[in-house]
Length: 391
Image (tube, rainbow, N blue to C red; front, side, top):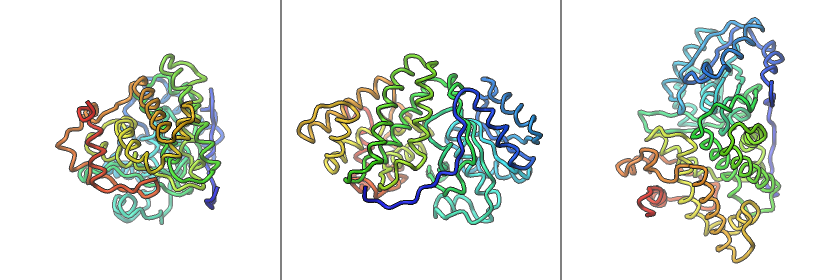
């Protein structure tokens, strides 16, 4: 463990059956006006909306609504939310939904009192917040992003074909989050497995970096084993509370900044996937699964010892020649991904080769992993991510 760090996570969590009662403890801490943010309306069909609204009214809140947050929230939608928050004089933004809704709520929270162009300031220059922040709370109905306990906000600019995440500081973290695994039971299988892979990718982005003996890596391996075990159960029985609760808890710890401590971290799979998402509007976790195997095969020679450790400690591959062991681990990972029904090539997501130049240009290059990619390498990874290229 060679990295120095400071660790603080200010988000208070209410976890488990009946966790929504935590709103009765949290809501009195904030003013009267609440902007209720949600997505396409599934929370009205599954009953969560009524339960949340009842808690808000019981606590004497005046509720203003901002629905219709899309799976890949756009900068135009954020600007609409800012206008709604201003009109409501919002004292609290309550996000009810999955990671996109939570990400969106944070983007609105830092923009209500901002006098600058919010896309340019936060998502191009990555400036810190220099204005008042409207506090955010979350009620989670889909797991995967970890947005319920971090400062991340991923926003898409369709006009510029860019999908960019800004990781804000602890002042933007949700003040509280409600995590009831039963709220995720009605999620379609496609969305569930997409979220599962998003969780795995978050862990691997932090795991595949560094060569020191790092406690964070041991934690990551345990999270991965738990995720794989619970995912196998949940795919067969989506109503298995134990499996779904373990997946929900793993998702939170995968990206609440803990396992990044003392490490450099990679994040290139996310940059590749987000470029795909900017051009196709495909489901986030599926964009990650489609590019992961080509990327990991590409960087394996530069981090072969860690890949061999991953194969042994996560996938149970017997120790042997490091490269052979490492590749066997990736093979087991790929077989598991296919069994879950994840997207394994870009054609499944509506990507075409005509989009290739644009996706390459939209990919931000990170420098924390085992290999800093050149544009030609990014192109080669995308080309391999098209299914017919591997046929």
